[in-house]
Image 1 (cartoon, helix red, strand yellow):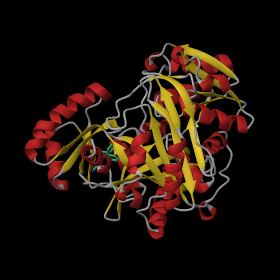
Image 2: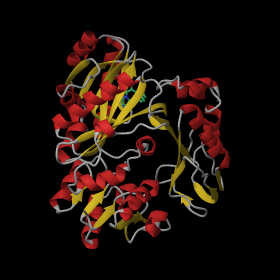
Image 3: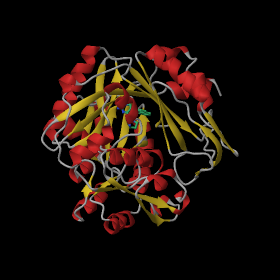
Image 4: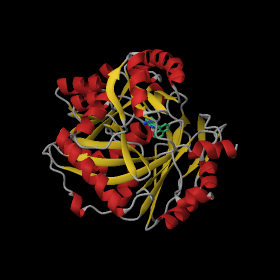
Length: 449
Ligand code: MV4
């Protein structure tokens, strides 16, 4: 097992990783920007290294500064968390070249899964259902027109290097392809350095269901069931639940089996998430995330598996301690992302938190780096806390989440939060019944603005 781990992240996820390390007797090194000098993850780590000014490009995204911090502190592994460099294959490669373990999949897998065309071809080849369309990357208009004709309109053109909803265009006709494609190419080249695209059949109003899995270095892989992530706004997840209320036992068993055998075939190691669109009882692979995700706690609550502890164990060579047939699926968990944003427009409202009281009680978990007196910086995401609840069934989980939200106090000069949004959502019939899809929240916000 590692002796000292450097956590190349900040906020709640840095604390989450630090706690898993300390529970295993591993020393921790935190890194921080000048804006995070008073952050909680700095206070709770055994050592800390200032890696630069507030701007992420000069701190949390700066590969040489983070690797240097690992070298001078003598860390034998680096955990990237999520966001920042967590899916940067070059970072993973440089870390490994310095004889430090990158806690995550191999750089090769990160490279493949970071390219939508290669990821789709690889996973399809391993037996996973994908969206109909041509996976061959192209930058030629005639190829795009031909591929759209084959899969039929509406189609969606996706930049292979795109992600998180950027670099996509839905087209209803050949004329729209001719207009949209050159614009998408220019945006993709500027944003991602590649204008290669793939074309797929556009799936209208699907659910977004993702499967969490863990894999060791000895060929074992276990799927920790699914998460329903359809309540999103502009590709930002807002509210997640596990398991999905839309799946039957049989459907769950089938997609878990298909996904797990594919992961073993491609030799995946550490943790990851396979993202599917789900419509009319069909699953369609869209992306694989080669990192720990924000919403991992809902999976931990229903399985009892500490996913970060598992990451540390398998990264240092241990065999998985769990197997699929014994894996629990207990109850229902929800995660509400409490952000420093206006509840109706999601406009960030950074500022100093002058009062913070987290809810508690049975089945309530709050993952946060916030405390009274800390500044929510405009340089980073506006997350205040992840409020997670767990209960024997969905009805009681909703009641518990409503109760926890009513206890939560977040005050600050000019600071608003998304708490009222969740209180409204939990009164809505569709949400109470779990009857929604990826466009539901945007429609709700439009109708309730
Ligand atoms: C799609 C799709 C519909 N049909 N692909 C959004 C970003 C990336 N995760 C892929 N995305 C989509 N791909 C086909 N063929 C709809 C989306 C999509 C979406 C997917 C999941 C969750 C939220 C979304 C919001 C907008 C679009």
